[in-house]
Image 1 (tube, rainbow, N blue to C red):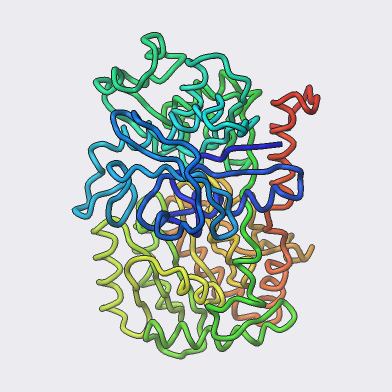
Image 2 (image 1 turned 60 degrees about the horizontal axis):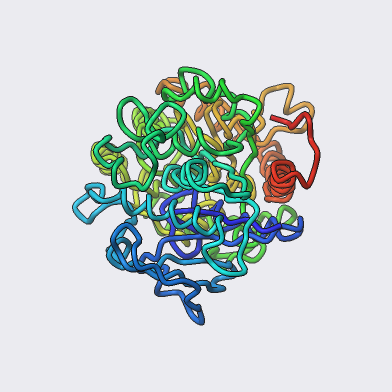
Length: 486
């Protein structure tokens, strides 16, 4: 089966968040299930700089008034089709935001072009290439299913994966006339959303199936609390909404071979973690005390619950813990963490921005990773934590609840606990979770059991890739499934 994945970022070519990790890992995971996946991605500078040996498979004279080329290539282990359109994509830094921090004003056109090219590929734009499924990721690819639904008859099927309902790709109605859609597409059954246009809603409305990145999140987004105004749409097509848990690339994230670590280790040689812990302590200029070393690797936003953690930091230090933070985000949170770092020198430290190698070292050296999210579709950092023996301390939400087993008395007795799970949305709840973690850490034998159990958890793509392959087969008619698991 041939599937075209449509994504605005794909690791290791371009990454701002977990979407890139998923788009980068899924093709390889699907290959053992009889699925060949190519990825359509915009030609940002970082993508174009890594292309070698590619070939132009199509020249476009009018991509929304712009000349462009489609380049097929094999790069970093991925089969990609790159939209080479410098006017749209040859811009510095973040692919969505200008250097001054504002969304690019033509993002509507940049990602309409991504969706339009995807749909055209599905309708045979390139000779000899006929994908049976187009798999669109998040709002940036959301118009692809719409272009197919409202375009000429095409046999290709569509899947829309929602990585985060909070980002809807909303634009004013004034752009509709430039989207190359028929007038009747501007309606409830099309791209219209509260008087404007939502690319995410468009994909969810027009795709054959909607998937989310965890079973729990698939249930949550059908409620007013998490549906972000789209719960009615989802409940109206509940039989085509599926939650498939994300996995991680267990080759890229392998503590036994990871070059970013000061010392590699396995679940049976965990003493190697000590060298990594010391490396983190040195990097963040923290005290070398005996208490637990907590970390955060995250966007610093309210969604991630970073304001709640900020309020609990004094308590963390009072309990004998230390905290290393890697991330960037809302200015008041960045300033807040810098303030507590200055208040608690040697106990709290922040590295602003994102550093892939440092994130690996932190997972391999810190004792626990704190993820107090208010909502979390899946989350990947807790999976990295499990893989590296960095015990996840997570809110009971979305994919966090699906992947971490709380160390409550029953789970400890049954020897299944892999972390600490708490009911979030208050600084007090975060503090109590930290206090529980410190107590668990003080029992060295129990703590190592929790670490080892997490390291032996299956966080790979194997099971989830099989579910995607099964879904593709079902919607294309290659498999009969009258009662899909949703």
